[in-house]
Length: 282
Image (tube, rainbow, N blue to C red; front, side, top):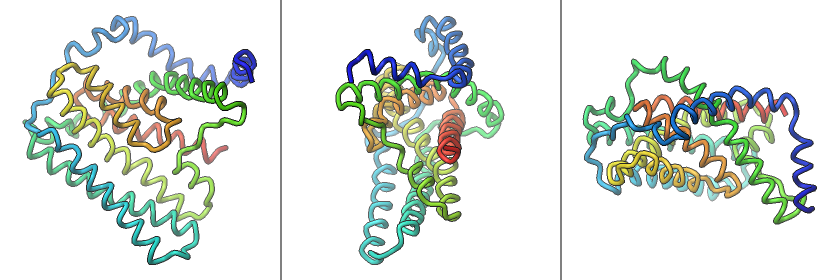
């Protein structure tokens, strides 16, 4: 397939419904770009979160989470090799969920110990939840066109390199929820992807990594870029990295702008919820 044919195919796949869905986000994004001189003045009033974290601190909960989940999955696969696939998927998600909850507790403990103003300084102030939820909707709408653009570009470049057979692989959790109709698996996946993993990843990548990076670099946009790169690389599917980086940059900006971790948590949860609904609907 040549470049012209690929462009024609993508053009034919864009429907009026797609355009209508993206229009609000494009409008919000356009207004933001104009008001902030294309982002240059967007974070001029953002102040670093005061803390005394050592450089290695964010890696502690990450490695503990990875070790707990990997060990549990390895033990189960050795002890129960003939477990039905859907039960294996259920246990894997149970380990993922449990490990994330344990890691979250560790992060909360570390935040209390290393942040000035403790959890409020970390960005967890329950008084801002209602405001953060509605702001998160607008933030996600504005990020959606960029995320879609990254997906389209990744597919476009993939098809130019590998040919028409190239397809972006679906996220593992979305594959599982569509592959298994058993209610326990689906409920656990929904809980894990909407309520648990977004909280864990935002506490870790925004709360710890982004804060630690900014403490040394001082430039807020650069800390967002680096932490977003780490966030994307933490997901094992390379074709997802551009879209994940774009989404992560939106969540990083929301954290720096508001000082609240609830805002990127809501963005992350809403994005995952939308993805699950779309996967089940299809």
